[in-house]
Image (cartoon, rainbow, N blue to C red; front, side, top):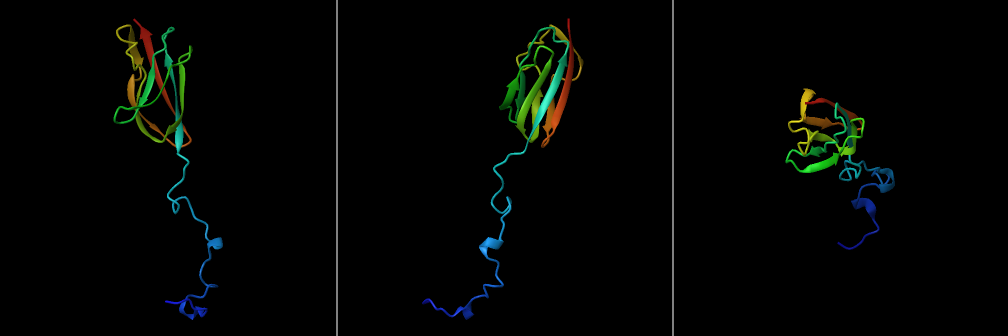
Length: 127
């Protein structure tokens, strides 16, 4: 159809939103680049110098993050994507037969929530 200066075939531009009036949201643009994250903090009481490897894994057992506690038994994992994970507080079996578990679980399911910290506690005693 050849170009025609007669706009009668088209909607009135005054009644149709123009691009300068449209503000797209993240949902309209396919989401945000910003990933929702949280953190995990914890304490292992009774280590007596042992620094076990702490491993955070996806459901398929692939590693997400790892750390070791400081000399007081405290540990942190930051900027973890929101979701459920398996947290192992003794990935390399350092506790083995040398420690008994007094309180808590060595391996547990944890849920990381947006902008919050999930806290875990484990108490062990050297045998």
